[in-house]
Length: 440
Image 1 (cartoon, rainbow, N blue to C red):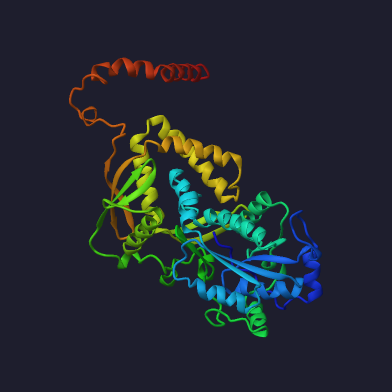
Image 2 (image 1 turned 60 degrees about the horizontal axis):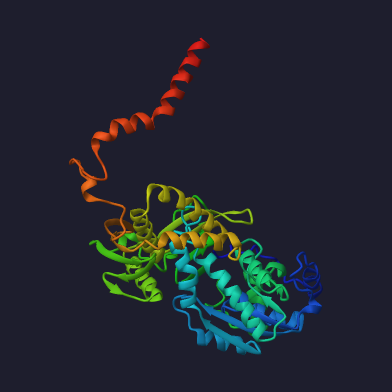
């Protein structure tokens, strides 16, 4: 998820102060000033990274190469972002459309693992960060960079996800995190931007919310969200229609799966990226996927986030139901425990932890039979399963009726089963009762 807004400093640190901060490296991968010559900057085009682009050139006397990654952020003009980077002195710029890789290699495993952290967060930012960091390593090596720079603060999870990934994949590369060390707040950043002729997106007013979004969802932090007694205000919902304003008529949507992979909506076969985008559009229209969430960050903070996750709400609901239909009682009781562990590893920035890839093997095994169609009713913010079908369903309509069954199940066998099934419980109960009677 995105990082919380920073606490403003009253003054911009003097060069010697920032020099001291940069010299106090506490990890082996943090760059000392004399090690920084050419920097790969993860660049969004916003205020933080635009100030960083200029600041790194001045403070480190280093060349800066920018990398901008498209994970399906809505409404972004990447030509403008790239042009701004060059205008601010980037010696080279890269814009990478990683939507297909993100969908197939990160979101799809999350669907198969029914990945939710803390009962509410479908990990859209957490899934994107290891991919962004991997691409940063690839392009840093290609561009001859010795250092990677990112715009994460010291309060959030993203610093962990990016730095842990870089340190795993490229121990030869160093890392700098200017926002974490320079102590500039929003006002100081705007002043720095004005002084150095850096265009400020949206003018000079502080943005009301800190936003992070991609193909799988959107998060909002800041402003009143940090006040737990404050109910959500309408202006935070820029993606999902407020449920009160959603259509008065429900919509039935069917989702088709093959071996755990969503492959179609309403009978139309679609590629994964298009399917996620279309599911998101349908969910947005019906007010689906609003999550007001209290979350335990791995750095120890407890925070509140507002999530808008229409595609995730639809596809995860459908997948869980289909998986339950084709699984046995033992599979359906066991797999959620592994799902939670998988989600935690991803949330905690441990994408390359061997346990996660071990868990992937189990997820693939279970999902080999997750084929079929789930029907959902979408209505004013709710998603409800209404129909189910699968050639692999562990379900027999005849066995489910009250009529006498033959073959696999005989109702006349039930009393013997009950007697054996309850044997230990009955014995334990009698012993406990006799023990209690003996103490009177």
